[in-house]
Length: 289
Image 1 (tube, rainbow, N blue to C red):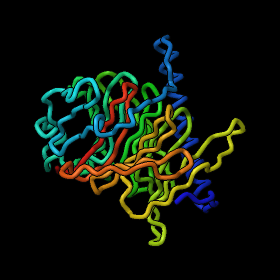
Image 2 (image 1 turned 30 degrees about the vertical axis):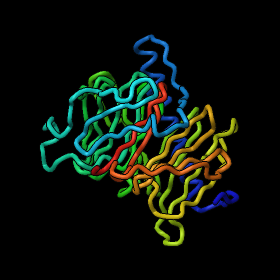
Image 3 (image 1 turned 180 degrees about the vertical axis):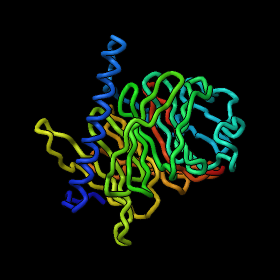
Image 4 (image 1 turned 90 degrees about the vertical axis):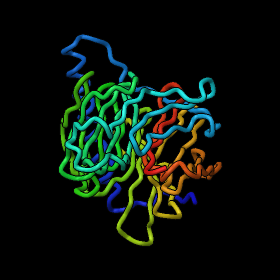
């Protein structure tokens, strides 16, 4: 499954895009730091227990958030349900969460395809804010203490969002030239899946690493067997790459791209986006189940 990284025409565009995103996030984080005169730790790392059956959680169809870990079998984030908020306009039930990620302070950001919105919740489960888009968001990724980005594959854009305790704002739009369906960030390096239009290429997962000279290279290139990769999470401590598929399954690869294990969770619904927080909690957005 692991192949040597091959230069594709869109790779340079992909890397240039994420360099722009990184620059915008750094600019905003710097402004926020100067204005508030506080020290911000922009780069942080994740760790995750390898025993996924104990740590897997779901952002359910009804919007309930829960966390599972070894110490507490189920730690509910409250009875809050975005289905009951009515803040988007109740055009249809919010039942297609595609992406989820967690800020360092525990705030949770969710991409909802049906309402064309990105929702911000506090770690307690309390609703905080949202941003509406003209097209359907697919995934979200936290890139700093107060910045994150959302992919809009239908228009080939990635939007940088900035957050505060009670607000979420569309900060800047960046044209990608490609349709980015899933993404995550770890320690300044970018991990992305790029779903291409060609039938023979059914989904590539790349780890792109920035060098000090600001040039880029692909260090890992995994080609999925099916068009079903939906979410990504990287454990920097163990060097494991986790992939959520829309067939109720999680796949685990090592840093060299070799598959480590595959676990299925029947009845949990189709998996979408996924992420890991700094306390070993795993969040998986699921549709149905």
